[in-house]
Every structure is written in structure tokens, then in C-alpha cells.
Amino acid sequence: MHIHQLAVFKKVADTRSFSRAGEGLFLSQSTVSTHIRNLEELFGRKLFDRMGKEAVLTPFGQRVYTWAEHLLELHDQALDDLKDFTHEMSGTLYIAASTVPSQYLAPKIMAAFHHRFPAVTFVLRQGSSEQIADLLLRGQVDLGIMGEQYHTESIAYLPFHKEQLVLITPQDWPLSEPVTVEQVLKYPHIFRGQGSGTQATLERLLRNANRRTSEFRTVAYMDSVQSVKQAVRDGMGAAFISEIAAMDFSDRGMFNIYRVSEFSEERPFYFAHSFSRTLAPYVHEFIKVGQDIYRPR
Image 1 (cartoon, rainbow, N blue to C red):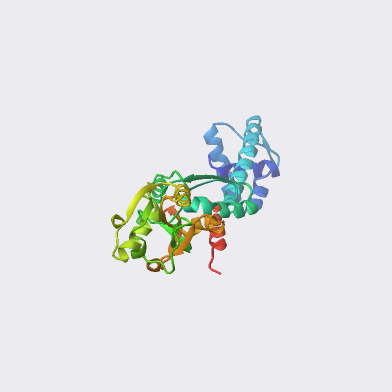
Image 2: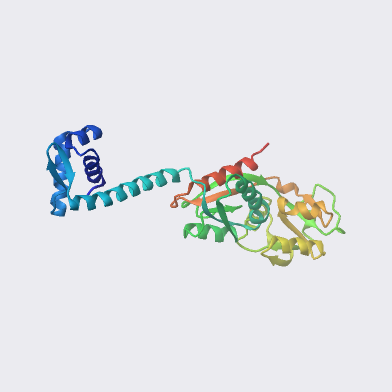
């Protein structure tokens, strides 16, 4: 039984005529008759009695009519819902962000998006860039926000913001700018953990300057950028961190911040999604909002 057959059947019942049904559906009378005959053969029951020039529903036909009305209405609702989905802005958006984006970029984008599309709920997870890439590949999140690229053959990366790494030191360690890597090798240093986008960027920048982290006096490795900042504030050592992450403590005079002459290269932050995952409309819109907020002015 096809939905089109039910539509023809209902039209015949409503008009009480095979010919008028055909005219309304732009079908020949013979085509209408064929559809009705196929339904009667399927059910093994007559659907219409011929009463003069009119086609009148049999008792079984009346029962079929009730279901036909329901099924055709459901069919129309399904089509409307599926068509509306291409513009729908409601649902749950699962995001995984690395440390800096999760604390300093994602909340601003989420707030701006929420004001425009309040029916979307967020679930924000935090992890290293490498962990986020794995979550994307396993389909456990819709979108990643990260500072490094992994599995580029399977994950799309859309850059939306750039920044530089900076050096932060305790307040009583004044340096004169421009600061060089050579100049700070003698100081104790705190580094981010492996898998961190910041640490991966730092190691790449140091290689470009013919330096290695092994040349520094390392006193700690910390997964949390907040822990790094607190440790620097309390005089434990210096650290290279994201400029975005450093600004709040720096603005309050809690530690010193310096640009490093060898670190002029800007590092991008990316929206990331799996090539294999079909994105809901609100995911595309979230990306657009983020790109607009952090568009270079």
C-alpha cells in the first residue's frame, strides 16, 4: 500500500466520483480505477459501491477512510517537520574544547548564540586538543574548539581566531623587552602537559628557534592553565601561555607579561568537526556566530 494510493482513495471518497477525483488529482479515470482496484485486491474487500453515478464507501471502505485520513495527515506532518529541520534552531549542541578555548572563547560564543537561539542547549566538555580529536572521531561530540590539529585526514578544521604565546613571570622578576628565549633559560619554568595545544605550539616555536624544552629549568608540568597562572603568581616560576589566558591576571597586576621576540608567529584556534558527521543546522550557525565575534577588525 502506497501513500499515493490512499490519497487517490480519499479523493474518490470525498468527491464520491472516480472522474471528479481524477480531475482533482490530474489523473485519468482509468488510473484512478487502477489504484482503487489495487487497494481492493490488497485488502480482499470492496471499498466502494456504485450507487447510480456516485461511488459510496462500503462499511469496510469507511474504516479504511478513517485510517487514510490519519496516515495522510501524519505524512503531511512528517514532511513539514523534515522540511523545517533544515532551518530548525533547537536541540542539544555537544562541544568539546581545549583548556584555553573552553575558558576564554567558548563561553562568549555560547552567550551570543543563546541570545539569538534560546532553544538550543549546550553541553561543554574540556580536554586536550588530542582528546577532543578522538571524541570527534568517535562521534561523541558535534564540534571541537582547539588550538592544534590532529587526524587531519578525518577532521575538518576552520580557523576563527589567532593569538600569540607570551611569557608570564612573578611580579618581582622584572625583565626588559623584547624578551628572548636565551634570556629566560636560567629561570625555573612551568610547562603545560602533553596533549595540550599550547604545549604543542610552544615546542614547535622553540624548534623554529633551535631550542628545546629540555634546555629549561623545569619545575612542574600542569594540565590546567589556571594552575599554571596561580603558580606563577605565587612565585614558583615563569611560563609560556596563551595571551588570552594571561590577560585577566595581568590586568589586575598579579604577574608580569612579556612578548617573546622569537614567538612572533600567531597560532590559530579552530572549530573542528568530523568529515563523517552530518551537522545539524544550529552547529553551522554556532560556527558562524563564533567567526563573526572573532573576525579580524
